Amino acid sequence: MTRPLYDRHRAVLPDWLALYYRRPLEITHGEGRHVWDAEGNKYLDFFGGILTTMTAHALPEVTKAVAEQAGRIIHSSTLYLNRQMVELAERVAGLSGIPDARVFFTTSGTEANDTALLLATAYRNSNQILAMRNSYHGRSFSAVGITGNHAWSPTSLSPLQTLYVHGGVRSRGPYAQLGDGQFIEACVADLEDLLGHTRNVAALIAEPIQGVGGFTSPPDGLYAAFREVLDRHGILWISDEVQTGWGRTGDHFWGWQAHARSGPPDLLTFAKGIGNGMSIGGVVARAEIMNCLDSNSISTFGGSPVTMAAGLANLGYLLEHDLQGNARRVGGLLIERLRAIGAQLPLVREVRGRGLMAGIELVEPGTDRANPEAAAAVLEAAREGGLLLGKGGGHDTSVLRIAPPLTLTVAEAEEGAAILERALHSV
Image 1 (cartoon, one colour):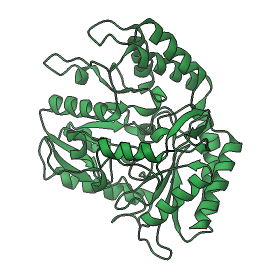
Image 2: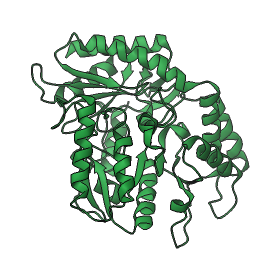
Image 3: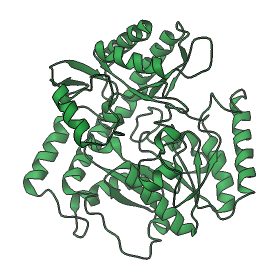
Image 4: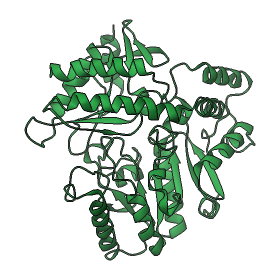
């Protein structure tokens, strides 16, 4: 049934528009943590539209809010007052931890990071940006220019001068064999040395947990230690929370809070989960930074009445039902179960993650060499078993990415782990 649609897709869409699976999947509807394809097959969704279906598929509170708002007015633009946008901005500003916060809404994480880069470079009058190796920040011209993952950066041309910093990947690279404290010290020393060769850097942008990079992260406190160095140089810190925000990590509402000793970031970007599938992104920044632009700007689609209604309903549901706590409890059980499975298999190098954000790195048995073929095979086998996963990784796409909706139950976590165990053994 999907073959004619696949042929039509190939005839009119770009070759570089990636599709999962040898037989690409058309998802027609969903409910809770499950989705169905055009052939009627049911799947447990452990990837949630790339970490975007944050609460649940077809969550009644969100669909009701969207339908009611669409029945009144769908679009007006930021040229007019928008009650829903103001209300959601108030909630996000209050939750951000950034003092005297201002919020600008966009339609995606890419656009949010673009805006943060614009603000930082204008505020600091510099086009130099520090980014992390193995990072991903979006698909726009400026975002791919700072992305430290060659598989997702198709051009070296950029309006920015980007310098890459060690530390985003704990278990690979020149400092992997060090203890956590020594690892942080070495990364800070590298940053200090790098800054000795530059001038007037605008900002460091970093994902607290690298998403596309395979759910890698540094030891807690690295970015707090970086922040002390950055502050001495007047350099801003942008925390890219597109994938780590809204309680997904369980331990914290924002990923930066694992590095909170030196205070909140100067700018915070968000997207994905807040809209539960609706197109919402945004930037939070201190007023002096947000207001530094000396020309007019608007957003035609950012902060639309419909998406803001969805965001308000979704955020309210998340907070009222303590989905951060559920991510901590169910995610903790799931990661321990996955680690027990991985310990039996030489194919599995590492199971890592936090809350409902877990990665399984696959290698050629007996080596540290990435095994993208095995990752692709497990993805296919899991689908045949009724489970949808994601992929990612640095030098090669060899990490299985697991990020189900935050309402995942213990029974569903166990069901998914069992399917994944069978898929891993089949490879």
